[in-house]
Image (cartoon, rainbow, N blue to C red; front, side, top):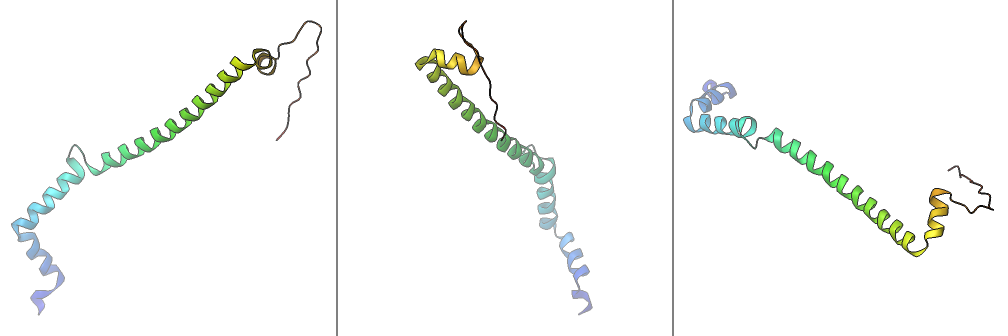
Length: 99
């Protein structure tokens, strides 16, 4: 029974050539391969970041399209609201809201 302990079983497995090859292969794939695990995590993080940026750019595009539509429909209103333009006989008062 003493020969059936955990350390003796581990030593027996390390002596098995298939086990050694399997461990070496797994180590190579995990740490040294072109597509190793660390690289995959970095790539996934980059993809997630780019997806977030893509969504932000889509929102900016929607806002720009809306601004373009406003400009095409009512140029005078757009110029007055955005650039505070006025006629010669007018006074402009700017009221800012605190949120």
